[in-house]
Image (cartoon, rainbow, N blue to C red):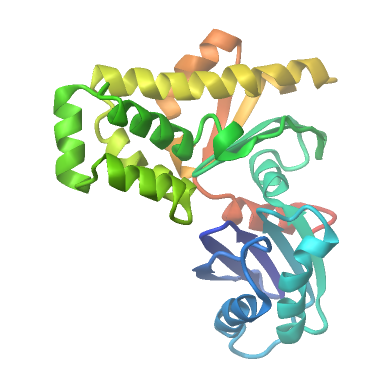
Length: 290
């Protein structure tokens, strides 16, 4: 049995591929090495593995893809928890951007765009990440993400720049005033998650001219500051023009992304809300996989 795990800060998708090719699925809380202590990590693994492997079969290999995995040291809490439940397994740790790249392009080539709560991107050629323009996080970057959109929307709200009908709907749905917003952004934890949580409301108003322009500005900024710049690093010029998107926010913006892509000579060729099932296919077919 092999396990494929794709984890973000808020949720983790688990897949167990059995010897007969069948696949079992479990979803748990996120396994972010930068946020969780060992006890919490062990509790999540303790919930997932018995559900995936109720017969106690030997787990031979684990492919773990996660946000925040930048070194062996950062992977240590997750590694310890997995080794307790799967002591014979060989574990490979990889970044979430590689998960997106393999899910979108396999061992091929293209520009990878992660567009969810936050954003990231890379140039992927012949199965390797060859360049990454740093995302910068929600203060310095994260263009093309739910947190960017929510941040700009709130900035316009606190300065009285929203259209009257959109502002009235926002106040009615969220009951937030200026003081509460400032506290949530500057005093309470998980400010980025709060700002990104406004995305469904904003998307529900995308027929409003103001909201449409805000969304186009969000997407244009990502294309201009990241996606369109990879041609300078590409051996294959065609690869630098083909973009694949992973993330629910990006998928919700598909039509607008194609519109923005035309401005920069980019072709959006594939959209996935989540990479995990495409990763199962990749590891079944790859020489390095299952």
